[in-house]
Length: 221
Image (cartoon, rainbow, N blue to C red; front, side, top):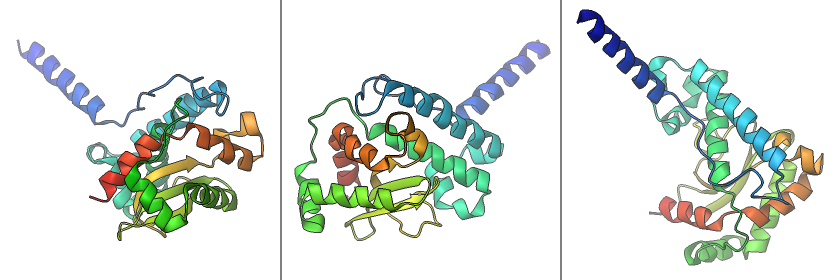
């Protein structure tokens, strides 16, 4: 009986330990769903190898106590943690958000509330896209470009290096991200080679404005 109880306790501990670990989120679409703008091979490698590596490395870098913390809490205090946690927590969060930015539907559009704010801040949606593309092209090396709601509830555009993001306490510009675009070469090199501008122009065909609008309206509450 004692042996059975001990085994049950160990099994429960193993289950709880597994639940505490960060995991790769499930994609809402197939690898080829975003073609011709993002090819299936890039999606499969990006998701299964690159994102999975960030998840695995993050779990390996965290202590058991740290694994129980929400990733947003880790990011908010990232200056207290090791470079391995900073890079991999950022990589996990950024990619998890990035997958939700994309959709096979090509006819989504910003909500009325978001359109109004875009027009007030950037004149129109096309100008905002051009500014995001310019910020993306201006990022030397790898990184991300963001559309965020700042603490004053206004829209801002900026980019971050590597796997940094605007939720980190070390970020030069802080805010609630509502749209992000991956600027790392593994996100586009198989199809676009070194033509980051072509990738940035194409990706607008698969941006899910319903998700961006949802995030915006949640951020301004």
